[in-house]
Image 1 (cartoon, rainbow, N blue to C red):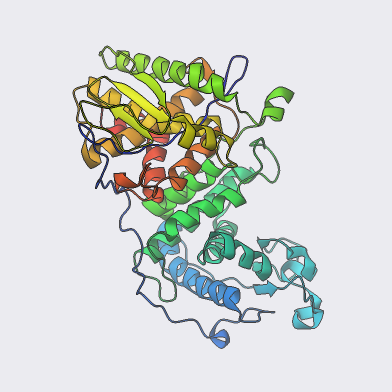
Image 2 (tube, one colour):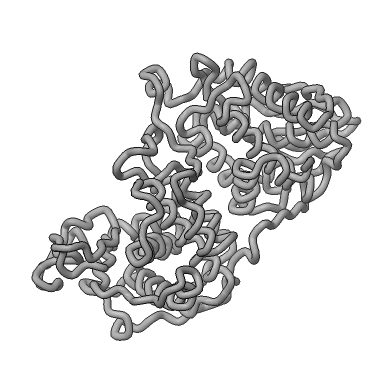
Length: 471
């Protein structure tokens, strides 16, 4: 994040305030259902009933087969009502490749879909369509070693998610692409994957289940799958930023395939952008920590909320931002046991520099805007306080997280003297996921990381009216 010229913001963490404000036991669920129970065992599809060419039937092939079978079931049911035409199964088949055992004898003519060499899928998974001159198109192929590595790092559902994304491209091949721009095509496929995942989470899939907590891992997996920070939206292979991809997935999860069909036209907003200068590229879009805490965070939060409340016909007095080390200041005679707090008694936002903001600023997925996102949550409680609204309970926490999203969108759209940098909003997603279950941070809110990101996304995309503070 940057001022003009460009500088940046950071990330802190939100805990619970003991006394006047207690962020504990709260629950704000914006999704229908959370996940199929852990005990919901689903039978595997027999290899003979759903052939995958080249498969060894290891764990990855099993997960992929189960996913692909259920994807066919889901789209056979959803396709006619969504697109007004019958669903046709893929004609080119499915291919599993082990890059360490490239045996051409296992594949027709030694090739995978669209007549490609078997090593074309190394380190990847992709759908290829039946374009003129491409034999054996309309096929999905995957590197099972690559998917296994993803599963090891981000959970056993990730290979299924990749299959759902590639199947989204097969859907597009049947009905047309939203616009001829890669980022729209790819994020729409993420949306289709989200719609299918919601069906799985609802317990309707014959061969797939997703356990509580795995939705957080699904979103974390998108961090690995995002474009490199600084990629422009017009790049020929652009897939989207972390926020763009997660947002598309959650849109499908929340609103179903019709929203995916209609929501990815040329006017769809994206947070991904290219670096604007060599200086920004070298810094990764991050301002110095001292500038972030001393000027960028307080200035941007104060500017945005002063203007926002003026628009609601209300005055606003910015809360004090108060750093501390190890032990939060007392609040109304109570000792908060948290790393980031809002105290209604003196209208202050405190943050633990030693345990939270400095380490988070230096972390691989952190940076300047992660701190400001975290600080924006209790700052949102200060906004609610000055509007005479509750700062306690599930509704207040949900509203504050949403308000942090609305603030982020305000910075993105030039409503403050501070400007967003590439990757800043991705830091918001990482913060919400990584600290959702931290007992000193967001765990006491009662929200999963998936839910926190969904509430934040609502604020980014829909603004203040969606955050329960005004029409």
